[in-house]
Amino acid sequence: MPNLISVIIPAYNAEQFIHLALESVLSQSHPPHEIIVIDDGSTDNTRKVLTNFKGKVRCLYQQNRGPSAARNAGIRVAEGDLICFLDADDLWVSNKLASQHAYMMAHPEIAMVFSDHEEFNEEGMGLVSYLGIKQKAFGVFPIEAGPIENAFEKLVVENFISTPTVMVRKACLEKTGGFDEEIWSVEDRDLWLRISAVFPIACIPKIFCKRRFHQGNISRQKELTFQGRIRVLEKNRKLFPHLVLDGVWRRELAAHYLGLGFLLLQKGRKWEAFQAGIKTLSYGLEGIAERGCPVGIPAIFKGCGLLGATILGWPMSRFLWKPIKKNFW
Image (cartoon, rainbow, N blue to C red; front, side, top):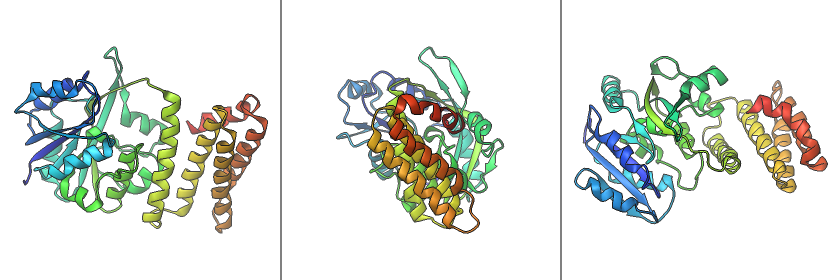
């Protein structure tokens, strides 16, 4: 339906927080046409909590297939032509939908608009602006409202789009294929890359979302994140090889293989770390082979450093890792 908003919320074992997420949607100054919750095989009392919102929320139930499959299931049945996503433990501020809807109506050429968010911890304390962190670290991300120039290249360097802040046209999702259900980590970055390769996107750099920060297993999360980023970059390099200089692809892939390698080495997984070092080195050698491309030189040195570190072992090589970690993370 034209100009109507469908809100899609994937939920897995979300009994503790999903009522708060739903209340933040129901309290919007511009109410959505529908709220679709996809229970992704929860084993807790999520379904029981959802019964308290009967008549206000449309619920789908499926076996556990991950957030990408859950979001895609919601997209398929959504009646609105504007789609928003919210995670079951996050919150929206009350003018999120109104502000983004007004922008999309005023700019029909824009396929997707996103905003800033802040994280809050278990004590309810707000942390710093997400876009503020990206701007400080990389200096290339949006600080003013409007279309994002060279969005695809910027997303190759770093993801600056937070999924619960997005409003996107359903037609755009249908054309780009939605979320890749084979990717379980940084799957959102993959979709934003595919969208920005074809469509213009824009930003309203105001905090419209509050994301709950979970400590969790940080080491495991880092490994999955590195693996996910590598997979997403390699996939999109094949899909859109000419949208950015190949040296940029190699630089980013070499950096992520390097980070993954030292993380694996830290866990005592020397052979996997050695393989990551070979990949880092190979991307560096590719850069040298390309005439006039200096990107490969540091990657070669770092790749050799990682390979040497696998021989020395982590207790000795942690001293090699310190300066690299300082510049990389």
